Image (cartoon, rainbow, N blue to C red; front, side, top):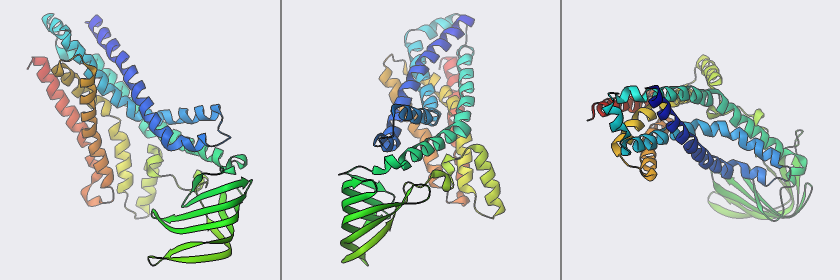
Amino acid sequence: MKTLHLYLLRQVAATLVVTVGVFTFVLLLGNVLKDVLDLLASPKATAGVLLQALALLVPFVLSFSLPIGMLTATLLTFGRFSADQELTAVRAAGISLVSAVMPVVALSLALCGVCAWFNCDLGPRARVAFKELRDTVVRDTSNLSLGEGRYIELGSVTLYARRIEGDQMRDVRVFAFTNGVCYLDLFAPEAELRRDTNRFPSELALRNCQGLLLMAGTWQGISAEERVEPISSFRPRRQDPPKLSEMSLRQLLAERRLRRGEGVDVTPIEVQIHRQVGFSFACLGFTLVGIPLGIRAHRRETNVGVAMALVLLLAYYGFIILAQALETRPNLHPQYLLWVPNALFQGIGAWMLARADRGT
């Protein structure tokens, strides 16, 4: 029995390392395209800074890739286990499937603890640290030469400058937006980037500018010797209150107590709390479902296991997306909806595992 347990653990662990590595890379690539490009455009972004930024993104990404990797690993491992007739040999030896997979279930419980750490503490802190690092690099004086001949988004303002010398610009084009709609189009032969005491760009002073302003649905021509447009994209992160999705569990609990004392609806905070805690148990549900599904699939092809994993993930994350979409409707208690996928996956998985143990 001990040999069988070690064999299954090694098989699952080896596949888990590969699948977690693949999913982590894919998710990191998405975050790189979304968040790290600002750093790549900066002359102050050395290789060390970029590596540090990627390292800070890893805990946040691992909170998602670990459950996904565990699900895929169990599907692939027990699919091969069944296809190679190893399960038949185990049953012939008088060993039940439930007793054989107990170490794998124990591994999933251990990973639940790791995911809880990532979801409730390390992940949010690392995410905030990454944004602070990005803001620190971006607001550096030498970094704020912005780049000539390309469009730069500065908060609600999009800026183009043909030539830049420090904070002085030539042939400047400015587009201002509100709710995603452009309401201002300006051109100025000269402009100056003004900063606050923290060296963050605070406003753009346009000289001898002219352009178009959208008023009451109609574009009107405007001109001015000097016009000042406020910008805010480089404000320090610490000056603004953190988003609920960037808070650790301890911070969320403190925020909930504070808002309850103020008589404010705490449902959005409750949703984040239950999401962090509930998603930490995903590894267990995915394992209980993945083992019998892998056996039932009875295939050696890895693409079958990956396809099944993606379908199950869509079902699980669908509940999370729905709960977050309903967080502004406290009468529906969306925070409790986040426990539905855990109950379904663990209950159905235990039932399927018992059926597979009986050979039905």
